[in-house]
Length: 480
Image: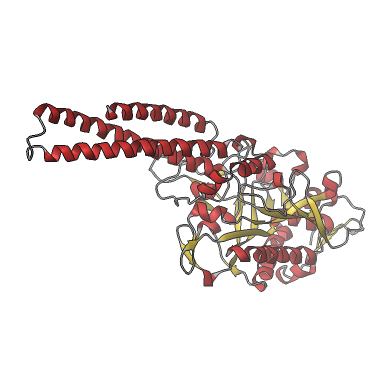
């Protein structure tokens, strides 16, 4: 009788299992996690205890497709508990049956008919327990997948909605009346070749030539120089990562609007190896460097800076206002990254912001500093500050300002998904991560060309701090 009841519960759980698979398939954006991927350690209990908080976070960030995930997690956990309770009763009955079978022959109280009935029940219970186990695994996996999709909780400093909060300015506005854009300047001075790159690689790529190529290297060296002076250690990260590492860092193949964001590497044959992705930022390989490791508190904060090539697939989908170097598929970027304790993350955040301000101030670029709103935060960020430089050619859009750097606190969002742990005195915790752009070459390069352009003399003035890496070149002009 008990076996029949358990079988009925198992069938119900199988139906639930099927329902879960159908509902989760429509919303899941996570790639399949291979066996070598770090095992995520997401705080599921906090989500279960605060589902409304996570739902509101999804709404505040415009992650509308994920707003039901918290309540689904709560429901799936209830279903998981029910199955566990049913499985416990079935295991207890199974143990009773096995004990009776073991005692058969030692006592004459059990007839042959009773033994046959017990054998049948034991066989039935074995199948039922196997189904219970499968359902428990499926539900636990489903809960983890739904939780992994959720964005980080939003910091109290972050404005809710779409409007950023102005925090201040860097340098005074330029007085020159010229609105020449960097594309025309680059063409006139033979500094940039978009046509040749379009033939070789397509729209969104470019060749930097002559003094502009030197400027790229000068900007990288200067950014590294400033960051090192502020205590950052230099590292050269890879540009290709496993897709599951990018996903754990909060970067998905497609954004909430379905737009392709990253490039995955095609394979000629299915050799069983995990999918690879070209990193959109060095933040991804740097975060992945400490996956599946345990860090010591005495080693924190650990602050690194590295230059790398970055790849973004979405460059061509933003309209004509992003032509030229402003939004491209491939570019060089100097990235800062830090692992900290919970109490040190704000200090690391401010340290990166200080580096950014110094670089842009000494490059003589007029900028504004913005506390970014909830709808502008990526999945991993709890707080983000952007610095936007003034581009004379963009006066008709956003008052001429465009983003050139950002700095974000990601709390333990990435480390929990990468299984990066922190050894404390009596337990382990998860370190916080902070990341920030020291310098993204194309946009800063474009800003230097436009703001340094002398219309009367037809030349570009090179910022003084870059002179040590420019081989004596202080102005860029035609035929120089």
